[in-house]
Length: 92
Image 1: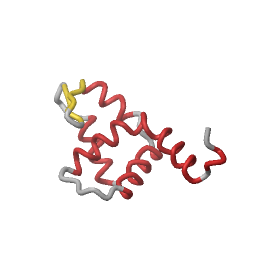
Image 2: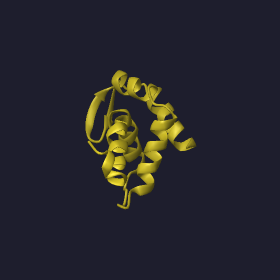
Image 3: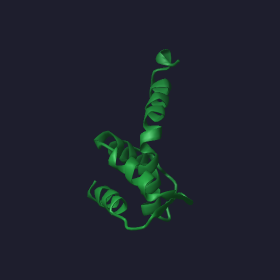
Image 4: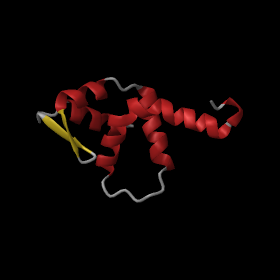
């Protein structure tokens, strides 16, 4: 958790005008805005996804950066898919 906090802080305080995430270059203000909107449930979601990952990660910092950047956009769909899988009677 502390490492994730440090990564968020490092990214938000970056002096660069652009930040590269998953090979794409974004304006720092966009990345900063998305990171400042993260809350505990987003970080918990990223940690849960990290725990389920079975592939070898060559750059954990890049993986976490991309996961945090996308967390706000993907968290709802992820949990909906989990519910649909575990309780198909509620799917739809």
